[in-house]
Image (cartoon, rainbow, N blue to C red; front, top):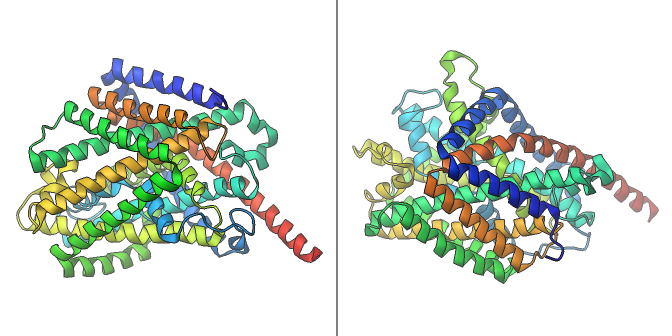
Length: 499
């Protein structure tokens, strides 16, 4: 195929080998990856925590520094998308299904089953559980995405480099990024993207299956999930075929409208006053304690290290594995914005929205739990729908949630197909439809095969393991970005003096 890079062929071969291992020997695959994941979490947990804290501080420093005035593109460029559409795209690519999947279940788990430090079921555990949900889905993640996306957008739109991870490292390594070293870095990025999205497709199919079972009695199992993935695949490939400015733009706006309707409905039919009071207090706790929570390694035997490993460090590795995909996508839709507008928008707006989402759904779940209905006994994908059962308009809420999961599902796969296409065609801003079609079918095939053998957990482990080497790439990207921004600032000042 014309213009297809070696990155495409190498990554497809690696993915095929990994999936084959998972299908042929699922138990052994899960055992090996579980052991490696545990080693990474235990040995490098402190490193992940430091890394995310540094990204957050650095993002804020860059945003308020003189670098903030530099535009991502030519000085005459202006944003391709309206601010509302841009924000919708950030959410759709960056969190999507996860907000619906974990919105009620994560705060509930922290409250009832495994609080970070408090007594299970106590008022303190509820407040603490909400603040940790804000942490896991808030500012540190979006700062990390923001720095990754900023490096990609700056080199792509300001410096005219291809939209590749390897291109952002040229200030450090020069033309060596055009050789095998650059290919290796891009292969790692594509591998993480393909498996990260395939795993999310698997989770999305499981939750849609759970919702349809709850509403209409659809059987829970592989056959139902296969049908769901097949239908969604047709829809997202159709969307990908229509291009960025049509398919993803319309889907992202639809996602935001559905999400706001569901959030407003929960606020109205749920414990409204308790939600507002708890959100106000826990947001204050979050802002007050974000440094302490971000650096918490729980080093002593009495510190509940299991919570840190099972939640915070798991999330930090999971988000790093998504950084190539989300970073590239955010970069692609952010041309024309200033660095200050870009970073403040990427860090602050999603953090406030996600925290309010968890406050609304988490508080409602806790309220239902306290009324005597044990939601914590349900599987994660069923907590939301069983919570709805205890509220007015339960069927309507469940239908909206299923539509929202489906819409997020399509948008995430659509966005990933676009990004994988870019990476397979030397960073082209307009990858061919044939390549997008191949990646679309590949992602869905991976998800179907893994669901069939029960291998989603093993692939999740694989992504977390792959996140470790990619985190070093992100550090190099950040160093390269700071070097390039310093040079750009000097260039702008020289031009100003010349005038």
